Length: 458
Image 1: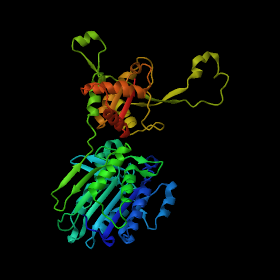
Image 2 (image 1 turned 90 degrees about the horizontal axis):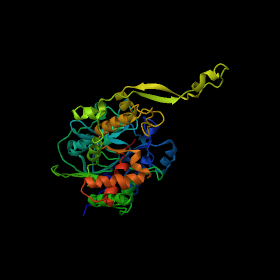
Image 3 (image 1 turned 90 degrees about the vertical axis):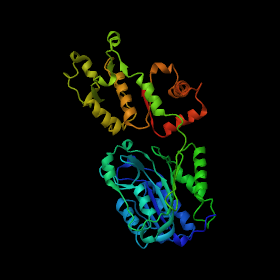
Image 4 (image 1 turned 120 degrees about the horizontal axis):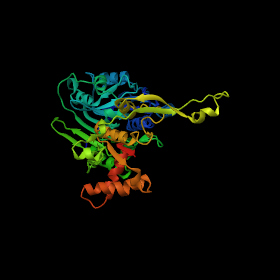
């Protein structure tokens, strides 16, 4: 039985970021609403408004949400949040029985010397890389400054934890720009329980229509079931309830991290979902297509041409801007088919430049690096280029699931039917199974939900 926590001794840092300096492609409908819902939960339990530090960056369409709370808020930028952490949570005169940290927004992980979770401030963009080093925040709050601090700490982090390269940042710049925190007091381990919306390399799901993060929605549903006098639930029980709810809805499973009073107990729980190494299985299937032999005779002599060694010229093709007026000479029959030229090559790419600019940085105005069509004359190298792309993706993006589909393999089936009936059964055979089980199909769907799948249609 948990001893009652005093509302006067409860503090909270609450962040909801929907709008980023990086632009509209970062918009995240729901985080501000989730933050306000959590604040309202605290206020109903008579937590002092002076102890709740609220930071919001709502979408323009959600400005009206601010009217749903009587609490003043600050912009969720690096300066405001960092100052509050340093002076209101890590200050020498700060103490309390319980600290809540609730954060909704975009996040990533970086892996150089160690794995670190990072949460983006609202003023981040592709140049400044402003982010909060969450691991350093945990370490700083673990040790109570001047024997004060917060004895019990609970963190709800509704943010993605996919690898940095999928967000198109330079890893060194992101690590350098990360805001770190440190305790300046005696080592005194406080109890910390962290519940993340997603495990490493995972994507936290958001429900744009309902205006809420799936994880936050599940957490609030459980918190709202608690007695109005209870400020600290049994966290293991809450974790299991949230996990069950998200599993039932087919959403990303949460993961938890725990540090006990003496600092010697650490437990990391990760979803036991990935029974198959999808990246490895797909890479092995791709390798069967990688060796090109332009001449069977040279192949028998041990001369094999590797697909990555073949040069394929690339160009960005766009429609020509046609003049609205044509002179008589311009429309002369002598010009023949020239009159019907509708496209032109507006930009050429070296191979590595194409991979980086188009696929990695999504630097294409219309498709943003997705739904790309490769066109060219017969024998121009379309299939060869596609093989090069497949090989590059499978090695560049960790946990990528690269699936090659030849149109001849479809045999009249639609793509979805082919993937789930033919392709997936072939994968099942590599795992010594007669056919794709329900569990395997669910795990396959999960790969799509985590945005790991790349479909290459030849």
